Length: 79
Image (cartoon, rainbow, N blue to C red; front, side, top):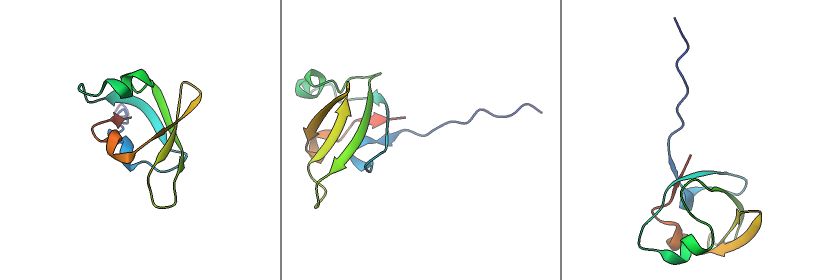
């Protein structure tokens, strides 16, 4: 019997912890600011730091650190 391919479920970027990341699968279409900083479908992103109370979050996008509020990350899913 052939092995079943592993499928990785999409995860919300807002819920990731430092060191976690992935390839962006889905983004909200109404937020041009996120697209300008590189949060677009197909781009790799990684959470590098989280402030002590959980907000803001430092992301690594295109090898550059970007500080974003968690509320701005709602609707972005990675795999």
